[in-house]
Length: 92
Image (cartoon, rainbow, N blue to C red):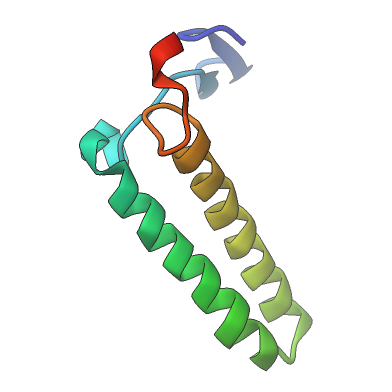
């Protein structure tokens, strides 16, 4: 997909739009990328070190796995995509 492109999944009901969101919700907090990355890293570490050892059921294991996947993916985006910590802002 190209930036700004929209693909109808269910015409008139559900479309997929490709947009960029450099901040938090609705692009608020674009200059606070480091704060969001630190909060996500704290949640990621908390779940791994404290909760994963206590999991006794498959449903909780799947739920925590999904949470870790989402937080980990967002954390990687916050670090490596502009205006992230390790992004190459000179080429944008």
